[in-house]
Image (cartoon, rainbow, N blue to C red; front, side, top):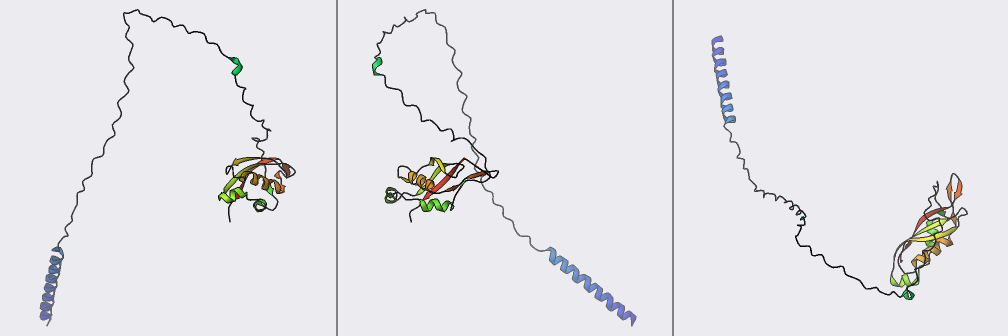
Length: 198
């Protein structure tokens, strides 16, 4: 009985080894996929040629001729000094406050906010009829009492009357002066005024 079981187990072992070899052979015989490689033609890059260097200046060649041109005499001319125009007027004097920068902790603000300026703004009739919209930037000098002392236009909308309307609106509003260490100071500040048709 042991002999029969040995023969059967030997037969089964041989059968298992044969089946494993058959599986290995099938796995190794698989086809490898073909890989196609496309070659792209890349056009050669053109090299930018440097321009040729400028020609060297020519050296004058001395001549044997000693001909020298004669001096020309220029006749005298009489000037009529009575027709000289008057000199242009001198430029307007600057008040000296335009380019002075004063540091401040709090900037000057219109009482009621910047909307108070927009509410006080009177749109010029000529600008309204022409459909002119935009922004006027006014350089404003606010003194220690919160009053507008001086104005200058930094950005204009042209001859539409908007510049004057912006200045009038800014001057009509009361201001809180700028503060430097809790003390009011006189400073320049740029204020935008927007003109927009409704």
